[in-house]
Length: 380
Ligand code: CAA
Image 1 (tube, helix red, strand yellow):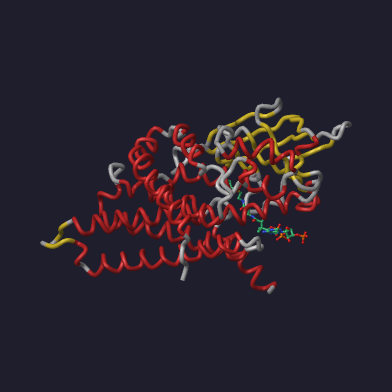
Image 2 (cartoon, rainbow, N blue to C red; image 1 turned 90 degrees about the horizontal axis):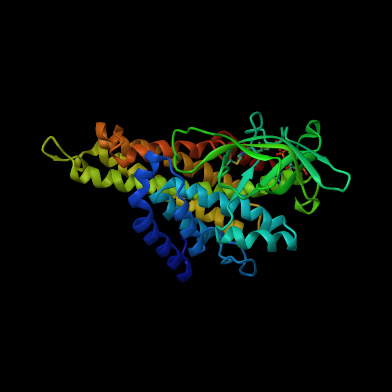
């Protein structure tokens, strides 16, 4: 049984109060207006939530991944769009710099990313390299002075329009698949970079997801992240941690759906009694609560293993797979409990239903999580 430390409980409390007082009230409006929540992101930065495990010497709080998971669940409970902005900045953009960056890279980028002065994104996916991440077509060549030149297009990049810093993957030789992939820290203000189409999406409407275009973009040689041609391991190692973040985001959505479903079931009267007295509804609530509990334990376990510095691909994928499917299950059941009202934009469960849908797709589909889990089972 997990016993959270005093510090973890305080972080959870802080995130919960901020989420419920400052984030939840405007979430429906932001969903409709699709407006990026810049002010809230700045506040998250001031609270230390945008660089939670950035070490203190680089301007962060040096907290654990478990603390991050606790905070991210709370923020996502209130607004999953804000949750993904926080998740990408922490797990996908700052984390590879912490784990693979040089001292100079850490000093230059981490303090500004931790405070949210600079926003980060993670640019791996391409129009024809989604689940097959090694099929990178973005090309990198080496200039005479050793700098790198990037050409190509990325897509589905969360925080793309806002990002000041992008962790970008590109190939020296697409035929060589993962063996030629390099990782770079790219400053988006540099010439040769542009934001392309912003995706119109089903959910997570106030986070922005974009195409990124690189046209003869020169990246200084000191911005190579890790070792040349070993960028695929940066990408995959980073995604392990990212998947814990999506599990936490999914938990937030699932818990909110459950709370709304339960409250509605107690208040809505049909056939002369609250519908919570009907076994059909009770079983839905019981299944939701049980799955949420299981998802939370898997997520905390994956975070704890990652905190120990172990490669925890199997645990991260199990957490992401189960929690994301739980979010979809709970959002669906909460909507069902609301009946026709749940289909109306005037009820929050309608947004949760749309927001939940991405969780089994991004940072690796459910099918990819099963593949990762199966690979590690067979290899053991
Ligand atoms: N950590 C470290 N190294 C790893 C690793 C990990 N977790 N996983 C694989 N590797 C290493 C392997 O050991 C292997 O190394 P060697 O060459 O030394 O043997 C190498 O990487 C290649 O591994 P695989 O043979 O397993 O590679 P593959 O081509 O079969 O692909 C895959 C594996 C799991 C399918 C991978 O392509 C994958 O995860 N795909 C999904 C991609 C994904 O999740 N994309 C989401 C992008 S982010 C996003 O969603 C956007 C957003 O903004 C939120």
